[in-house]
Image (cartoon, rainbow, N blue to C red):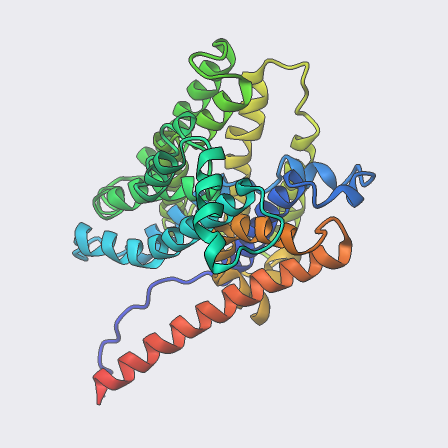
Length: 389
């Protein structure tokens, strides 16, 4: 008896959920450190470079996002309307960014007002007026953040929710995903390998420009670095790199990573290479060299690391595939968006510069994010169940 044809399922790679968690924790720890919450770890010379560099920087989110979306749109015949896809991504991410930006705005108004206590109802107008008066371009900053334009012109406004800069470039990436996915599936292996190398050229040129110029029109090195770090078009190529390595993986170019012990050895080598690259950074180098070592080189390592996890073999892949790690990992982009306002609030409540309070803060942020993610999954399943009745 002939079996009915089954619909092919989209490929899924559980270990990437755990990698999301690792990258998210590294970013949150980075900002805890920059807020002076990790001073008690200053003597850990082997650990602090991982936090302060950081080892798993924002670029890794673009690499595995490109990889995952290329895998989701793996059917070349599938119609992927751009507008509904974009609105789905905006609905998932922008609402949280919107509310956290408003929250951070309110927190900063209170912080700059000089009030040492929560204002009573009658004191709110005075608190608000003093806070706004002491802030730098408060309303322009708010508009820039809410319109996702702050990352393009960060020197025109104060930062309200700094990680939100990534949404600007992510939405650019999402806009090109449907048509670029279809285009990629028409390319042969040779073209894909050429793309594998050429996607790094814009980032390298960006590093050359960064190192060969002075402070340009910025107030100083920090403002210039912030612009070069966040500027959206360069990030698109990191996302495209993730899409390209998926296509090469789907073409069978990395079958050797499925062999026993190979994935584990590759994972160990890449982690050591990533860790070692942190110690190559030096103030004696040209800023462009440091920029390359901190941005372009890790992107290559991130991509290869993602590939080494796909078989589920190896010590890191097995850890990342643990159920609770995957659950928290799937929700890890939410801590990325909400942690800075919460760090500011937490400093007003307690001293974050203690191991106990750091752990409590991390547990709170990731617990809330995971519960929110699980609620959304439950709500979606419930809606599907009702529609099926």
